[in-house]
Length: 161
Image 1 (cartoon, helix red, strand yellow):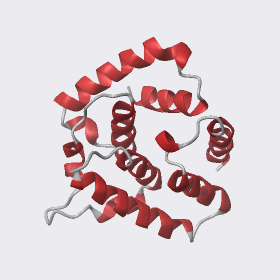
Image 2: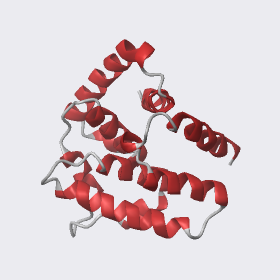
Image 3: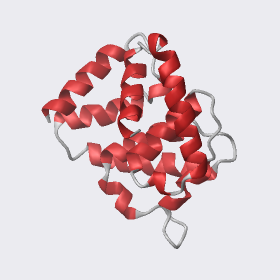
């Protein structure tokens, strides 16, 4: 299932999802069931964030409570999250699908934005460009006409580095 998240995300970012609509829908239905029934499916930060975003942007209801396990015993987002830049980018994009009153998503959006902006000032050009692009153009808000070219450049940079 993990590979499917990445594949669906890539297909959508390239703007070629229409021919795969049926297959994507089957995977999303399974993912929705998994999100609503299994508590152990949320161990990987990036997978949790991407799965949440994919479901929400396709109209599935997923409770923002799936992110509650990211908090420590004091109710604050865990500091160890700052070590996972890819996961933080996923969280930032997921937070953009917040419904009014979902405080955890607002908190996640602020938290991930602050950490990504801070991280961005101390890292190499290709990684910083990827982070800047995520912060400036979260996937669901990006204009689809220009996104495939940008995605390919980002994908190449990730494969090279």
